[in-house]
Length: 203
Image 1: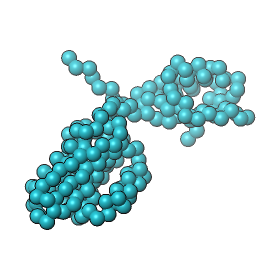
Image 2: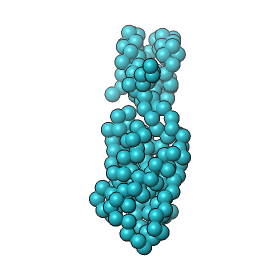
Image 3: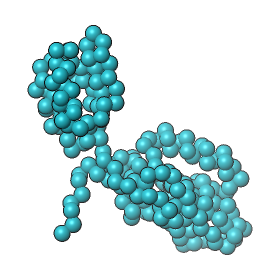
Image 4: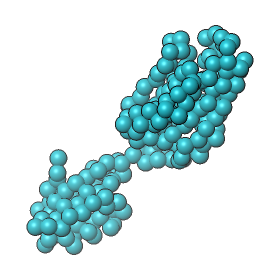
C-alpha cells in the first residue's frame, strides 16, 4: 500500500531546465522555471522576450500555489488553445505547481496546422520537464508575533521544539519574531503560542 501524500505537500522543479522540438523547419525552444509569484513570472518573460527578440511567438503557462490556485495560459498570437493549453496540460499531467514554462517558436516557413502546433508545444514542454529535477515542496505560512522579554524562554523553547524556521527577529522594547510554519502544523503552532501569556499576533 502506497504512503498517503501529505495535504500540504506538492511537486515542483528544483531549478531551471530547457527542452527542444523541431518540425518542418520550426524550432520550439522550451524553458521551465521554478517560480513563486506572478511578479517573478513577468520578469522571466521580459528577459526571454529580450533575449529571443527575433522569435515569432513566446507562448507560456504557469501554475502557482499548493493547489495551483493561480494560473494562466497565453498563446501569444498562435491559434486559440494551440499553445498555452498544451503547455499547461504537461504541467497538470505531471502534477506540478510553482512552475512557469515558456516555449519560444522560430517559424520555419511551413504551417503546422492546429494538431501540429498542439503536438509541438506539448512535446517541447514535456522535454523541458523531462530534463528537470522534480522535487516535493511543502506549503507554509508566515506567522508574525510579539511578546515581552519575560516570555522569551517559553517562546524560544516552542520555536525549537516545533522546528519552525525563523525568518526575522527584532528585540527592541518588545520582541518581534516572524517564522515560517508548515501549513498542516500552523493551527497547532498558533494555539501553543496563544498559551504563552502576553503573545500577540501581527495582522
